[in-house]
Structures are given as structure tokens and as C-alpha cells.
Amino acid sequence: GATGNITASADTGSATLPVNVSLCQTNPATGLCISAIGPSVATTINANATPTFGVFVQGNGTVPFDPAANRIFVRFKDGGAVTRGSTSVAVRTQ
Image (tube, rainbow, N blue to C red; front, side, top):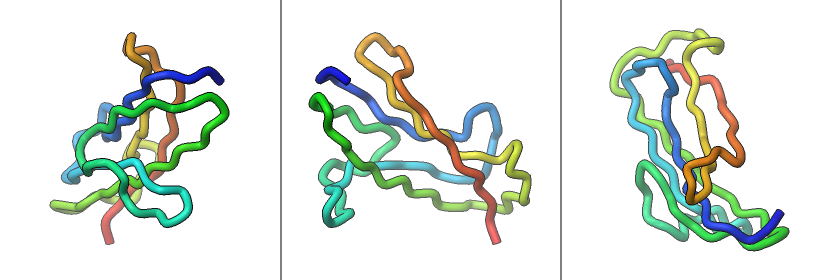
């Protein structure tokens, strides 16, 4: 793809879950955060680059096993708020 400004964010979609979700951009070689940890990260992604991100989830109550409904979504939007990519993963507490 072409170089562009992207904002990565993480959320629980339409589900109200007792979790705090944050993320950071990471160094692909070390996994260490290279941006502040927060609800979103604004970055420039160069053409043909493969940036990496760490997602942090802290439970504040019980999240039952329901992978169809209880998910964390990571969204990548451009400067016009158009979604350019997204992914999700099931979440539960133990």
C-alpha cells in the first residue's frame, strides 16, 4: 500500500464488558512499545511497511466464555476515518 497516516484503536464493539483496553505501537524486533500506551495510536505507515502493535486488556469483573459476543476489536482508520483494516479476538476472564 501507499504511505499514509493511520490511527489504530482497540474496543469491545457493541458489547459492554468489564475490561480496560489500550494499545501501543511496538518495535517489531523487540516487542517494546515505541509509542505511548493509550486508547489509540496515531502513526504514519510507510509503503510496504509492516508495523506491529501491542494490545493490553485488564479485566475488572467477570467476562464469560462467549467468543461470538465477547471480543476485542482492533481497527485501523485513515485521516478521513475510513477503516483500512481490522481484526478481533475473543476475550474472557478466568
